[in-house]
Amino acid sequence: MPVARLVLVHGAFHGAWCWDRLTPELDRLGVRHEAVELPFTSAEGDVAAVRDVIDRIDEPVALLGHSFGGAVINAAAMKDGKPYGTTSSLVFLTAFMSEPGQVVDYSGAPGMEAIAFDEDTVSIDPQAARSVFYHRCSSDDSDWATARLRPMPSSVFIVLPVPVPSWRFLPSTYIVCTDDQILSRSAQRQMAGNADHTFEIDSDHSPFLSCSEELARVLHRITSDEEPG
Image (cartoon, rainbow, N blue to C red; front, side, top):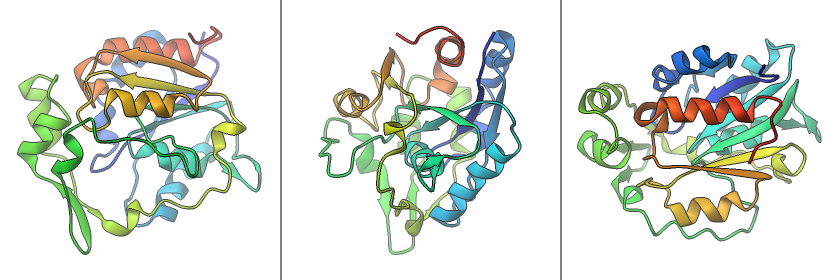
């Protein structure tokens, strides 16, 4: 049986709704889970939202961050040199996981160019989102998700400084999505080198929609007594 409660932290432009196709699969496998709704009001607000969920859990927590959410869980997982609350492990799902000073080559994927930055907000065009976030999803799921995307204040992308990455203190797993159009496979593999364990799945940037059953199986293994591969 799984031993950690999985806390799901979504990425940029998304919300807790993005896990709706995945959570029934987690339920079927007995993976206990909670989803965080990031407010996108400030970096501090996003970290606080994650910690608010952790505060309600009195058992080990596996923090999962998708994409931008990887930076959020890195900041939320440690406080005053100790794991925050019952945080026991970290999962980076095609997520940002770079060491301070580490140079990661993000040039291998076209999707970054679809993200529009202006003085106050960051956004993505719906048509671009369909091709770079959801190109392996059904048209229904792609339309469903695209309609729910939201812009973000530019200031939210200024992630809280973390002197030492949380994964130096906590067991970590990186899940590489090999057909991601936002974070290239090579960039992910560079960052996965920071993790204790790595899985790879044949997926776009949104495996919680395009291959939810496979992702659930991987997460079940990560959060169970089995040693990750």
